[in-house]
Length: 259
Image (cartoon, rainbow, N blue to C red; front, side, top):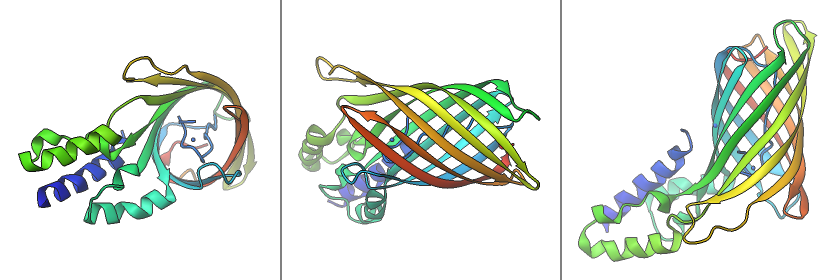
């Protein structure tokens, strides 16, 4: 069983790092979709905390990511998970067992193109699109690498939790931003309506039908000396037939990337 334990630990690490390759899935459920159109060339590392306003949706969510901007083009990638899942990860690494496969991470990527504003202009306008999906530990299991006596356990695990239909969410929208100079800092206010398209891939047979919903987000970013920045956002709209809202706060540090 030691080999399986070692494999399980490696799998959980791989699963958590798989999303590091930027909720609704190009966002983490429980986390707003941050789409401030006011950015400059540079690289930044982000950390965010979010929560749904409705108790029936994901509770507390933690998200980390990186963004890269080059002129009018902005790219971002993030990976997020429930805070409770994050706390259980170390236990699963030390002692992998059935149940650890329930821990999932959501990976997302977002691209923006600023079509107006920037520089000294107080107004900015961008269009954006992205995609995201969910990953679990069982997605990375390789049962054939285990001793023959342990492969039935691994195969049972994959059969129950392994690769199957993936929900892919694609947000498409526009973002409008307003910059308010404050001396050493500047306050950036933004709003972003979007369509959130849901599609299913890698289905075993016929995929379920997708969905299209309208959502919107508003937020504020406060960059200080272009090195440190704090941000907050509120995100609302339909998920299925219900209106669901998220709020989130976060900070980033880097070289450039903010104006």
